[in-house]
Length: 567
Image (cartoon, rainbow, N blue to C red; front, side):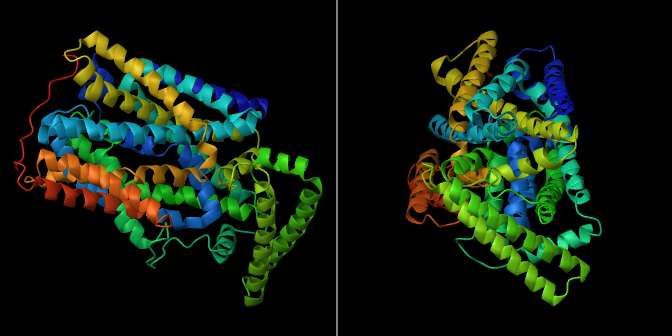
């Protein structure tokens, strides 16, 4: 990066951290630290909900997913609007009526302490893994820029985010999210415009999309039904609806956002805000990845996008690397000429066939490069999906704009990591430490415990992040990890909200059975698309909860307002 890029990046990070601390407020109570004093407006909550999910994984992973697999991933979000409407109608009123600080407090009011503890423990494990992935994404960016080991960049990121998260609490996190969302989507828009403006003279946006469409990149909807296909219309409408219900309706990292609202009205409007905007925003991010694909039809991409692996292959297998490099350059030139001919002939049938044949030849040579990278690597399957977008940004954007894009990556990462660290700390202290270790804990000691818990989870996330590079596409990895847990969590909350005859015994053992069902199914049927694990886990939990409730003293306990932790 140039000096101007570094100036833009560093200035952006300093401003974000400073703004976060200044917006934290003077109230240092537990109520302010975990719930922002219940003073937040809908637009701040809505942007914070969006920012918590739209991490650097969105920036790096989703754009790269658009390059590699086209628009199909947008089907993953088809269920989100449905989920938001249901959460606004059922979950948000229940949480607000009872005055809970964590989603899992509600389970104790409805069932018992054992069910609350189990659900909270599952959240801590699952979200701890998720925040590790969110931390790994910007570490990839820094490693590419600086040429440093990823572990060093992970340590830098942990220290940077922990500083203002520990001191500021939820208010500073959410205020910063609103700013960070602007920086993030500004960066995506800049990348999209640069990719289109970088096309050769005479190649329009329409031409670029036509070429991408021929390569299958614009196939946004797959109406076919296949249990093993990750992204289809049906997995999006069914599996992703269950996943979204679980994530936004039971996960503390999201529930805590709308628990800070000054009223139920502000909670509901913030959820509807996401229901309306999330799908088009994700579609645009994927389209930015498709634009990068079109750009690389006319500018040569590297055979391998991972720079360190590319250098290792060239060093350890120079003859094979040179041969593959030469073949790749020839195949790229054939595809570039075929693409130009397609544009000049306005998409004649002959030019279509030539382009598709040339694209297949280039893919075949790249497969050879991937096989070479996997040889003697010691890391199993090679994947460089997460480096595609970064390669475009660092190699083809003008000075200053690279720094802006990288500021967007870090803004997205910081919003997600800070939100999740705060939620993890809140659940740790409210659901476990103040409940079992130090019951009746005082205000000052509770705030101190929250800060120490934040630091502890930051370290945990940093350790897990060191394994992020082995998980392939980040955007798929984070949702796969969630799908191992979310179905049973949705099941037990659905039991609490909708089924008054399910007992505490049924809720607890139903959750255990649901978790076991998901994990056994995934081990027994490894090819099953992960989105289907969510409805499976939910239904298994509800059926088992109903069975264990028979004869165990059925009936709901009415919710009641909760005493504040530290009060």
